[in-house]
Length: 162
Image (cartoon, rainbow, N blue to C red; front, side, top):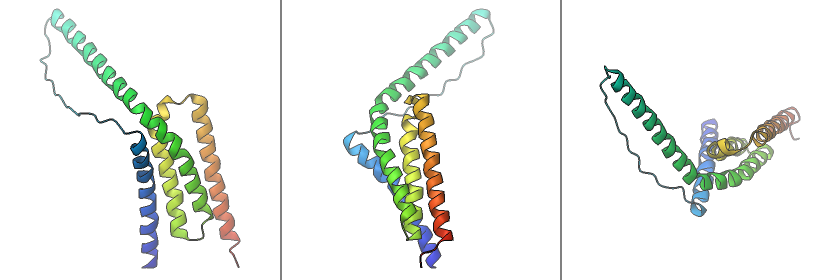
């Protein structure tokens, strides 16, 4: 029974932490609201060369319109994503580090997992806007952080407190 309770605590922390960070950022930099529309177009396959030319022109225009909509959404969400990565990164790293030092296994595990999810949430919206050097540095820093936590946990398992 105690083991199930610990799993629930760890899972709860891991789920709530990234949500808390996102909503906190949303207070200062609201995420823009978008109307979602789905349009279905059915076209009959052309049979003449002129029809095929018009078909291709329509396809090119549709793709250009979709690209413009994606760019507009990207431009509107960029300030939120920038602030989220700036807030989520230190909070996620701190949660992972604090979780690796805690003696309460369920809370420590929850903080480690929640910190990792917070980092993923922070980076997911802004990853495409980072230059390759920053991407590489972020991945290396994440790998080092995982190595540090692994070292801490394995060292604690080998040398239990007396």
